[in-house]
Image: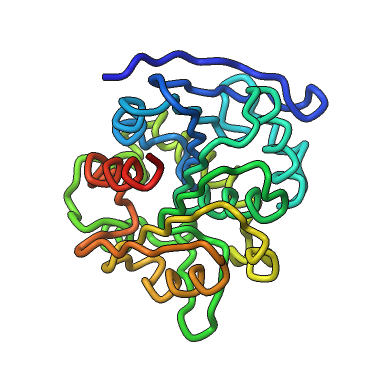
Length: 260
């Protein structure tokens, strides 16, 4: 396991105090987590074997700073907030990897200021919408339907990180709060105009998508490729939306190969 430490920052005019996990050593890599919060620990450990991984918690998810999400009103606030966070960490143009909701944010950061991202990896990112292939709102999806929607293995041990369990009070609160804090920035649909801006992304970009992603059909991979000039797509046979949880070793190897 790569060496890990935590750093707490003061960002956005001292109104947000995120915790950033820093793992490993090597070239800097920022990892932006999905809508369920910072739960991709195995993937971060794998990436930390080759990179210095900076994994910030989304505003509102740091213990003792739960009201921080109120300081940010919309997607544009959130993008500027991440500018501030990169600056606080001294990251001039790191590689940025984002999954799902985190991929949406990573894409927006790279599009609005192309100088801030050297290379970009988007893992099944939100951010676009097609009327002929609507994206299901996982926040309000019945809990019994989530395993089939998000996982290849519907009995995978990491299901407990996303499915509400009334017997696990702390887990229930964590999941509900994470969905509330991230959902604020993609409600009612996860499309805030990225399609109009993504041609501005200058960083070489890898789009990783599971062929069996039931939440975000693989047709969206083509939509991202069309909009980003320097993009390549890697479709993962049998891959589902939660690849960072189900296949962290394989996914980390794919990311490392692209970034090296």
